[in-house]
Image (cartoon, rainbow over all chains, first blue to last red; front, top):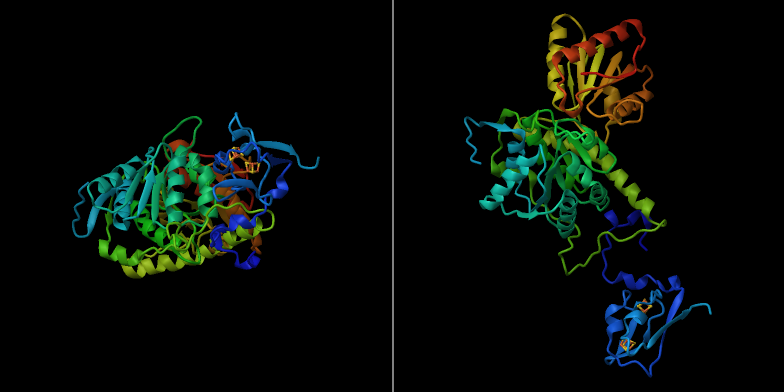
Amino acid sequence: MAEKKNLPIGGVITEAGTAHEYVTGGWRKLKPLLDKGKCTNCLICWVMCPDSAIVVQDGKMIGFDMEHCKGCGICAEECPDKVKAIKMEEEAG
Amino acid sequence: MAITMIKGQVGLTGNSAIAYAMKQINPDVCAAYPITPSTQVVEEFSSYVADGKVDTEFITVESEHSAMSACIGASAAGARVMTATSSQGLALMWEMLYIASGMRLPIVLTDVNRALSAPINIHCDHSDSMGARDSGWIQIYSETVQEAYDNLFQAVRIAENEKVLLPVMVCLDGFITSHAIENISLIVDDDIKQFIGEYKAQHPLLDTDHPVTYGAMTLPDTYIEFKRQQSEAIARAKDVVSEIGKEFGNRFGREYGLMEKYKLDDAEAAIVILSSAAGTTKVAVDELRKAGKKVGILRPRLFRPFPFEEIAGALKNVKAVAVLDRADSMSGFGGPLFNEIRSALYELEKRPKVVSRIFGLGGRDYMVKDAVQVFDELLGIFKTGKIETLMKYITL
Ligand code: SF4
Ligand code: SF4
């Protein structure tokens, strides 16, 4: 964070990609769990996740960025009915 | 509309003069939704766009909320942006007015003053712009068509001044000024171009080599700092308004200050009043002066920021003051201008007596005899040192 008295006027953020520094994982009440055996790597969850928290490597869904996943459950909801590879569980449980 | 000048003079309505000033300013973007009594501003300006007389991108929108939203987007993108509205239109922009000022976007809006509903009314009063008085916009009130025309160019300079960077609202009275034809002097296009210069936004959204974010959320750790920045900027605007008013005078022969004082120096009684009604009051002052009565007028031109020290200085020797508001703040304690003028005088060692008179709502005529009556009352207060009626409605 810049010195308070040097804050850019009007609240403009003058750098790109700063959302990454804002760790939203702490907001989570539920956490997503992936069943790798069921996942078909269709990547619908990657498209739908509002926090870009689905981690994909070489075209394969490999898990979640837990620093940014807010636990909204959209990925579990959107994972196709015939697959249902993501389950939401209580964070603390 | 073809405009023919004779010896540098031309007869124009307030609305046509504003549209013509906008044509001369040639803003990058105009987003507007026409509403009475400012309709002709948008109508005539859109003709200039259609006829290729300006380079402006004209955005037709479905409401004033969208008009101001589009202005905000365009201004954040780095464009010079203008719009115009009245009454309910300004009210519908409310949410976005605060966003324009908070994001420090130098948008220029003409508000042709009109009463707010209910009951519905299309005629002049100041309830629309007075409702927006805390929205962080600079507000300049114009007495005449000439002043409204001149104010628009100054507004561009004030808004874009790097010490300010805030939106500016230029107000003129609905119908009284917007629809009356006045003989005014126009400034030639090249001189306007030179006076306003080019606008270079500091952080334009469209500069993809330097990506920026507008409108991000701030939490309790920074929000108050941004508001303090904004508050300091609008306070600084006062001197900028004076400097630009002077520069305008040097270049074009018509100088503008924070306020106009009319026969105020030796006045015992004074009326404080905004916009066109000051003209009517001047006739009353001239008549009363002929009868040997020491009366005068203070017409604030800049209302936001509020030049409280200068106002106190101007009224310090007056004994009785009536603040005439063309709006009611519905506080049970007089009009908005009354409250601020009275508060500005509080620091004086010897304070004048100050009363509130609310007049002319919804376009009710305010006549010379109304002003004379107020002055008579004030001279009574001057004699007795006693206020009989602190607040009341006149022109009933
Ligand atoms: S729970 Fe929500 S935030 Fe977390 S990975 Fe799924 S969609 Fe993204
Ligand atoms: S939506 Fe389901 S199946 Fe598709 S990649 Fe995500 S977890 Fe795998």
